[in-house]
Amino acid sequence: MSFLIDSSIMITSQILFFGFGWLFFMRQLFKDYEVRQYVVQVIFSVTFAFSCTMFELIIFEILKVLNSSSRYFHWKMNLCVILLILVFMVPFYIGYFIVSNIRLLHKQRLLFSCLLWLTFMYFFWKLGDPFPILSPKHGILSIEQLISRVGVIGVTLMALLSGFGAVNCPYTYMSYFLRNVTDADILALERRLLQTMDMIISKKKRMAMTRRTMFQKGEVHNKPSGFWGMIKSVTTSIPGSENLTLIQQEVDALEELSRQLFLETADLYATKERIDYSKTFKGKYFNFLGYFFSIYCLWKIFMATINIVFDRVGKTDPVTRGIEITVNYLGIQFDFFYAISSSKSSNVIVLLLAQIMGMYFVSSVLLIRMSMPLEYRTIITEVLGELQFNFYHRWFDVIFLVSALSSILFLYLAHKQAPEKHMAP
Image (cartoon, rainbow, N blue to C red; front, side, top):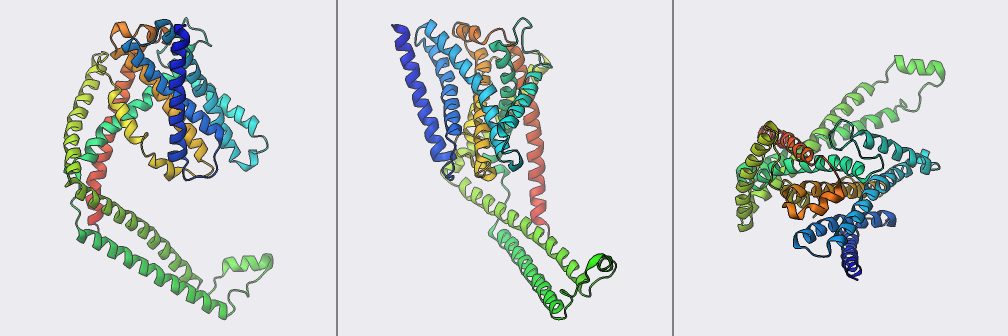
């Protein structure tokens, strides 16, 4: 009887999580698209539901909610379903929608989708060869084989996000890193942009007048035909064509310059808005958070270095910052979704987000396990099997360190070159 009650609690929570994922999909991800694939919507919502259920089960482990046998059963079932989605279902449909967008392969899209999925499975399986992630006694079809490989990908993505976010957050929040942009700077750049546009219009008028003059003189229609005519047109030139070619090259260069000036103008406006925002109460609050995260970033880089050098496993939760970064960069706006998506690619992008989300949550369970007291991690360890848990923590530290140092170098170069770019005449 207790098992039925426990199962009803879990099923109810999963239905609620599924509903949240469905609403997020409808009102955020696909709100600007009329063409919707319900299979994509269902896969995303199911992945979201089972990913949230794993964290719910962690909370239940700590609070001792539900019977231990019920928790074990739902842990096992939840992991089996999420692995089935991440390894078999989502990769297949990603390949299916990619092939469907290629007109030449449309008739045989099912066959080519299977070939893409088999290619993914080959590289997915070979991924485990260079890493000491598994005990050799596990069979090829064991759940440990799948979790270990999903964990490598998920921990890598998590560490990359966490390393970049730990550096980018203080850089974004702190007013110390803001350039001093005035209204005069913006007006000067806008003046350059308008002058460039005027030059483009003037040169295009010259080209149009030249073509009109050539047309009136009959130099456009009286072109020689045939093979010898083609040879003659190559070896001789029409009067005025040299000027057209030269002017066209100048127009192309000016159009490229106008694009750069437009982007720089938009960047200056964004920086000016950040300066005004930093003077508000909320901006000062985030500026204070920037100093806090700067200290955190230095501490995390130092601890990651210590862990790598001395081959130790940190006892503090390494995913706390990763969760915050993922919520900030993936869970709220998904601005990049609209920047790179279209009616054809949006299904593939949503499935990729579902894949990343599912792998992230599975990897979080692997890393959170180390932070839990021994009495709370028993069932989790039994469900996950005999994995090399220490490896994932060391791997997280390595990727985090590389990501953080690379982000520091990149932001330093970008911050150093930005003033020089705007000061250029």
